[in-house]
Length: 332
Ligand code: UT7
Image (cartoon, rainbow, N blue to C red; front, side, top):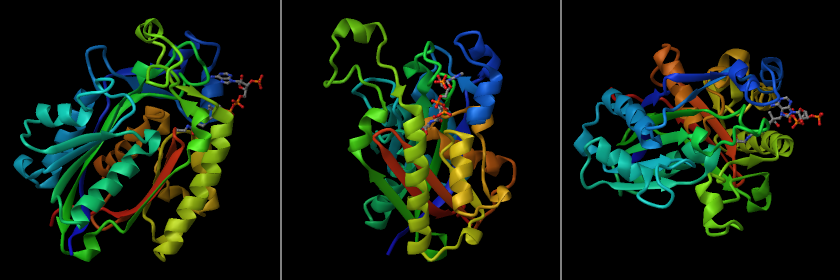
């Protein structure tokens, strides 16, 4: 049987930085409020002519270079994004694959908001274990600034742009294999976090859409509570089902939405401070890109070594959630 190994990681953030002080000049907020309630200090913002696919390509190139897998051996590209280059088509994954110079690959996007990276990890794992694909490039890429309302202090302080990518490859060595991936969704909570306009269910006409009304809206406080409850339960289950103790986890890498959510879930799981990976202060919430960006951070700082076990968890619009137990398994 083929197993799926997490071979490599890469990430990219655009140059421009938007600080809390910058936001305090745009809406009624302060660095003190944002820092205390979210842990965020700054976020990166893509240039006008820099698309989600451009961020994804730069992250993917790094992951490919570090994977030891030749470009022509990648047989599938999956992108998790809620800020695609184009509204319906082509998919951002298709654009990324073409910009990378790939020919004749399977390429598609998935929409699972901030849980997107965990979803595409599960897709890569399933395709590889079934024998249908051998090397899958997964990309979480977001230009959230394009769908953020910069007059709404409840959301604009949270989000940033960036991308992260990983190469997942077939292996026969079980010790290298991704252990498990959980994914879930509950549409009953859809109205907590959504972009109500712009789709076929939109109550608005084309004029509103052209005026740029397709922004994210969030009931932050309710989302916060459901996030802590759902994540804690899901992660406890994945650990129990796979007989993994919190102590066996080297790196706990949660979706970076809010420091207080990460702390609450980490405490419930009895994670020690040194296990918890935090990037929310410098990148804010980059939705489907946040987990691979955080993995890249510990990789580039030398904290992530071959064989170490990562525990991922994420929560987002849909509502969606997920978790994963993933050993870091670069090609030997
Ligand atoms: O990534 C996917 C999922 N997303 C999340 O998980 C995000 C979850 N939610 C959150 O992170 C937090 O709920 C927020 C950071 C969005 C808000 O923090 P909170 O502690 O839940 O604040 P709140 O919404 O309960 O608001 C408390 C007060 C309110 O004022 P009053 O009614 O107490 O006078 C708000 O109007 O803070 C006010 N407020 C602000 N004040 C200054 C809300 N946003 C701001 C702001 N600056 N930016």
